[in-house]
Structures are given as structure tokens and as C-alpha cells.
Amino acid sequence: MPDAIFDHPRVAAVYDALDPDRSDLDVYAAMVEEFGAASVLDIGCGTGTLATLLAARGVRVRAVDPAGASLDVARTKPHADAVTWVHGTALDALPVQVDLAFMTANVAQVFVGDGAWRDALTAVRAALVPGGRLVFESRDPDVRAWERWTPERTRQVVDVPGEGRVEEWIEVTGVGDRTVTFSSPTVFHRDGVRVESTSTLVFRTRAELTRSLEEVGFVVDEVRDAPDRPGAEFVFVARKTSDAGDADSVRRLRRRRDAAELFADLDPWGLIEGGAPRDEYSPEVDALLDLERPVTPDEVQATFTRMAQPVDMVDAFGLADAFNAVLARHP
Ligand SMILES: C[S@@+](CC[C@H](N)C(=O)[O-])C[C@H]1O[C@@H](n2cnc3c(N)ncnc32)[C@H](O)[C@@H]1O
Image 1 (cartoon, rainbow, N blue to C red):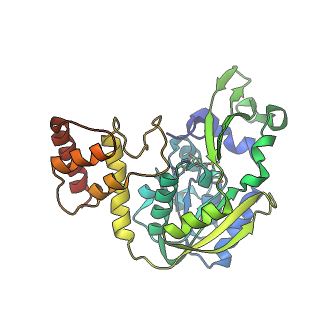
Image 2 (cartoon, protein in one colour):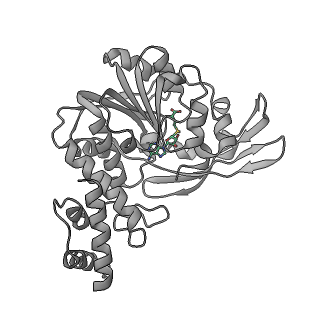
Image 3 (cartoon, rainbow, N blue to C red):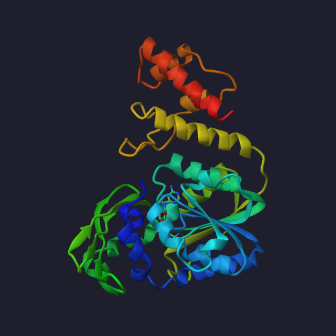
């Protein structure tokens, strides 16, 4: 479920007015030329500012976001007709082959669990041609940006044409080991409506980001500085060197996603909204999802017992049927 700040129609409609200076995107637009990219995938495109800017320059753009309300705003922009909009995540943007993929602003930091982050990177990798690049930004945890995310420093009131005065601010509500949770309410002065939104961002170190990229088969070419926040962010430029293994890894992602929905009660990957987040997927369950043949109830029972989530034989039969439906859906 996307955060309300991106998926509430009235809030999404004022997103650009509340953040009108998007000169932070200039550096990414320049990279399209630098790398000679003719096609781009914009992951977490939000209200489509970068996607439409690139489309206006003749770049072939596919843009994906799980927040439907943001996409609705994006579709109204000049040159939106030239963009292929996809409602969902990077996995939903497949199959596609592009020269360059972007995750701008907070996008790379929304993937809190390492498993979810690796899945996103795996899907992006499959979307790139061999030699294609992924470029994303992520805040340096050492800079502790969240310490400045106070209501006093962040509050703004903007007069939005057709909507009137709109107020918003940020308040940090929790700082974890490497996550920061904050609320960002939006208040519409015209009628007093207040829309609440809560977000959690993960702050990975440069070493953690490098390792995660290498694990899924990227080579890190460079880590640049973000001109709009010098010294505060890493801008990673990672390259895909070959497409070996893409088909298998995408099949596993699709199977995993379907299985996670089916097994919401057990949620062996901790993927379900509100479920306990896990850092790692269960390799035991993944092994079942990699099977080229139907799984047996015995195998299901043994797997869940090893994971300290025992199921009786009747449930094991039902789970095996469910697993097999997923396997058959993504052969
Ligand atoms: C801060 S906004 C950035 C939007 C845009 N990239 C920009 O620069 O304006 C973060 C975006 O990430 C999107 N997002 C959240 N979860 C996502 C996911 N799993 N896959 C792709 N995008 C996601 C949100 O819906 C939101 O539009």
C-alpha cells in the first residue's frame, strides 16, 4: 500500500505545488544524454515530472508507481501521452528492455527490508539491456537528515490555485536501527480537511548499497554527489553486465509475490503489509518456489516445520495445492 501522501487524490493533486523546485532532477536528465540512453524506466515516478520531461526530449519512457492518484496527476501533464504509465512496481513494468533506469527522490529508501530491496533491484536488472544502467539516490545515514525533519523547520503553507491554502509539515515519530518513520499531514484550509500520512524510509550505508547491488549482478561504476544536497546523498550509477539468470529470477519474483498473497496468514517472507518485517526471505520456501515440478504435501509440511510454523497434514495438502497453483501460473 503506497503512503497516503502519494495515493490520496486530493494530496497527490497538490504534490507539485508543494514541491515546485525540481531542479534536483536536472542531474538525472543530463545523465540520459551522458549515457546516450534512448529508453528509460522511471521507477516510483510519482507525479511524473521526470518522465514527462524526458518524453518531451524524445526519450522513450516507461514510468511505474503503485500510487494510482499520483499517476492520475502525471497523466494530465504535457507529453504524458508519449509515456507508458504502469500502475504497480518494477516487476509490473516487465517485460521491457531499457538503457537506463531511475529511482529519484526517496524511492530507493522505501524498500525497508533487504529482501524487498533485493527484489526491486532484481526486477530493475531484468528491465535493463546488458550494459544498461540503474541510477538512484539514497541519503547518507551519517548525515542524520531526519534530525532536521521537525515541524518548525518543515512547515509550509502554499496557496494552490483552485484549492486555496494548503499546509504541510513533517514530524519524526520513530527512529530505528536504520529506519526513520515520520508523519506528514496535509491540511486544506479551505474546508479544514486534514489528511494523515505515515512513511518509513531506510537509510543504508554506501557499503550496504554497494553489496546489495553486487549481490544481484550489478557492477557499481560510480557513486556521485547530488548537486542539490552536496555531501548528504549517494547517487549510485550501477551497470548490468549480462542478462544471464534474468528469466529465472523474474519467475521467482512473480512466484514469490503470488505466494505471499496466498499465504498471508503464514507470510513466510514477512512481505505482507502489517506483518512482521523480516530482513531475509526464507530460503526454504524459495526452494519450493524454484521447483520445476509440483510440490508434495510432505515437502510443504517439512518446510514449514523447519521454519517453526508447523502445519498439520490437512493444511499441508491445502498449502501444496496453493503452491502448485502459483508454480503453474508462472512456469
Ligand atoms: C518521494 S516520491 C518520488 C516520486 C518521483 N520519483 C519524484 O522524484 O518526484 C516516492 C515514490 O515512490 C513510490 N513507491 C512506493 N513504493 C514503491 C514501490 N514498491 N515501487 C515503486 N515505487 C514505489 C511512491 O508511491 C512515490 O510516488
